[in-house]
Image 1 (tube, rainbow, N blue to C red):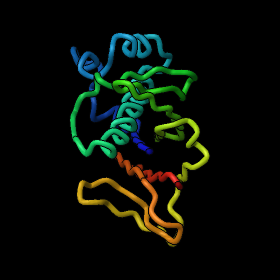
Image 2 (cartoon, rainbow, N blue to C red; image 1 turned 120 degrees about the horizontal axis):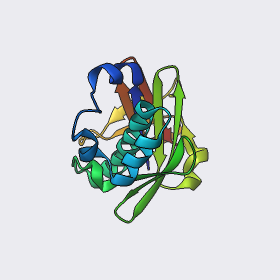
Image 3 (cartoon, one colour; image 1 turned 180 degrees about the vertical axis):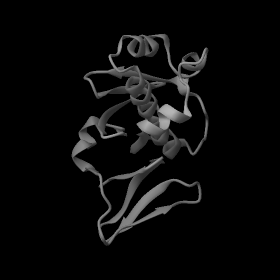
Length: 163
């Protein structure tokens, strides 16, 4: 499965005061808070970690159809500056983040072997649809593929997994 999240970093800087007392404790583990504290760009690190959690949440939601706000159940571990793994219970999801201009975009997959199947743009003959639970998929000539949609501020990203 696949999940993604996009953050408009300029908008996030205006709309969210992540430095207020107690904010980080509600969203991030002590290890994640240490990553934030040690980061050269703490603002970017907050949103990288958050977007990784959101991308993994979308995979879990697709599998369970449950909408549960529980960011502390998702633990992010970095393996590079913009890559790593999100652990949720006994599941581990690899993720990749790309930052360009003020757009931070994270994609997570259920297995690292699925990276070659990730498609970042809709093709002209494809349409984005949602099932009765609001879970997105792409329908087109090649069949139906699981998808993930995210939008924030000036940015909207759609990714799908070609099976």
